[in-house]
Amino acid sequence: MDQMKTVNLPITLPDGWTAEEDAGYGVIITGIATCGYKGYVTVSESVRGFELGISMVRRKMAFSGRSWRKDLFTSAVTELKKALG
Image 1 (cartoon, rainbow, N blue to C red):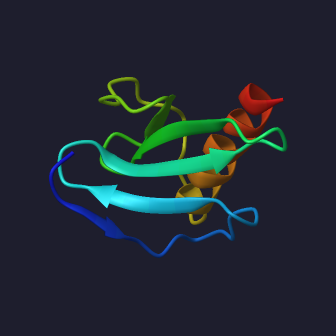
Image 2 (image 1 turned 135 degrees about the vertical axis):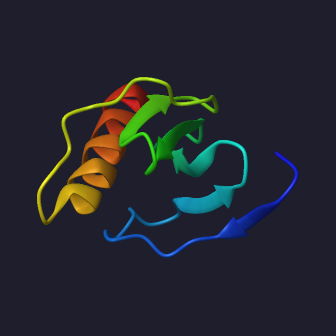
């Protein structure tokens, strides 16, 4: 994770959450649970998929149509929220 930069998303993240673009992985969203634990989800627009944690996204998911980008990020944030409890 050499080159990180802030990125504009098609959704609004929960308060305190951040999103940064990494040249090698894609967009890394950092979420914070109410107890203070941090969690991550990596989103790849080129693959149209996401993985919990900071990792290469290899699995393509069924995101298509006009709002595919918004749906992709919404699903990724929802899964991270579930993981953080």
